[in-house]
Amino acid sequence: MAQDGDTNAAVSATQAALEVIQALSAAHGPLMFFQSGGCCDGSSPMCLGDGELPLSPYDVCLGEIGGAAFYIDAQLYQSWGKPHLTVEVAPGAAEGFSLEGLAGVHFVTLTRSRLV
Image (cartoon, rainbow, N blue to C red):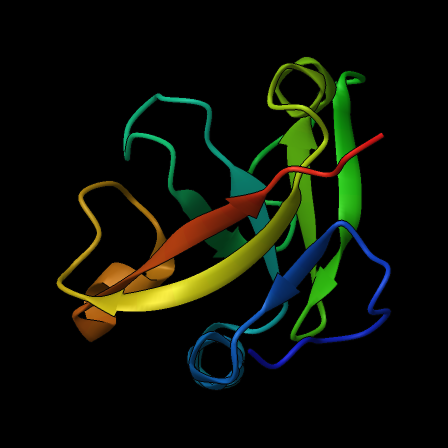
């Protein structure tokens, strides 16, 4: 899987996901991601216009994928065991309001727990 940015970052993306992110960025401008914890699209990452989702003081940025910041609720990240998240793209429209749904695909998150 291709990674974007620092290989020690807590989030990365596959090459296919990076290509979709690039196309969405060209069409919609700067983007952001927010990892859902079960609302709306289940536990799928949501891709939005940068600043479209107001962040809380409890949200943390895990890094960037394709130039887009990737956020998650700190408590959710802790409860998941601080995993490494890899964003992939799959066929079929997103069920929520994530931008990639218009392209007939949706982002999914693959998690790998870290041993401490």
